[in-house]
Length: 539
Image (cartoon, rainbow, N blue to C red; front, side, top):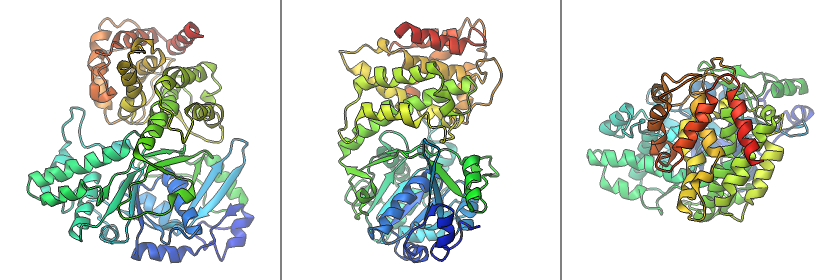
């Protein structure tokens, strides 16, 4: 048996016997260089980082294009740092699950160290790294809600307001802590840096920049930092916020994958539950398909990312690719499956793809309603992308993804995954927004989902959402059966431009959504029946 913490050079034979590819470079050497001369820091130590970013860095180190390991920072869970990274000597094990059932496993030594950072436990290693001239790139996979600074009314949350009032010394909010680190870098010679969001939403770099500037402007207004700090953050020759589009489905660790690894001779591969409820493991399982497209804006230089399969291009192309994927070709399809799958009591995306109505639903959203407003980015073909999603990626039974996981934070996704397409229809005189049928149906299904009753009328626990309390309050009293005041109750939600990116009442979609919701509220089985009937109307 071999352990992930074992030195993969001296234990190469044992790793190879277990069917695991290992690097040729010395992990300890690149780790030491990552501490003394950091090149790349990543915030968010979850599965996506281990499955994708760590793999990119590994390939670049193998090619001699990167000489230092990454510093990975987790701001949410010390357990991740200690049990997933430190217990494994900061070595990463990625398992690619292929549609034919085979597994492709590899160890990466590209992580120099993993640190936990919070106001209660600030990382001095992280602060030191931000002051180093050698640092070129900081990437993020912290989920979309990690960038949020305001509540449902658009006001700064109480903790963010306290951070703005207190200044950069030791803030609590993660974006405020990042801004504090940038202030350190500013004070050490206004050193250049690229801050690259690789989170899964449109204009992610712009969102990151806006959040950082919100904190910095608050500090400047309170005379807690110099105005020159704002100039530094807004000078692209000093600090850049490149856009990116990332795509690689990386679900929670699968028990079956862990069992397979242990059968092959690797110790301690059983997933375990963290104290906060999430499932963790010493491996990350992911799909074979993957894309990362980034804007080439790196004021302090960068590794040769393109040599590891990253598409490095101009800002306009990234925007086009991102909009293609996030607003049409994958994310809206995923969210529709998450909503309907939860209502129809599915617990696997691949199982949902055996339901002909659900497959037809996402085809309608992608091919029929989405493609007419998508600009071809040229570097990836939109229709071919949807073909791969529908025919190969989502049906893959070896990607144990669940609708419940994807349904997390849906309120934060609606504006991008559906609102952008609606906006395009409103802006194009050759299109009628009322021709949209299945995007409104999905929005109605989301409202039905928020009642926390499945299609059998049985209670279930909705996935976490930062606006859940607000949404439940708005929908209070709606139930299966007769709902005389349905229009009045859902109107404030549908008119919430921040929620959908557009006022759906003014857009002329409220009546359609209301009618769909009313049908789905008629009783048990009404969700599946409504979906089937609407599909029959167009097929």
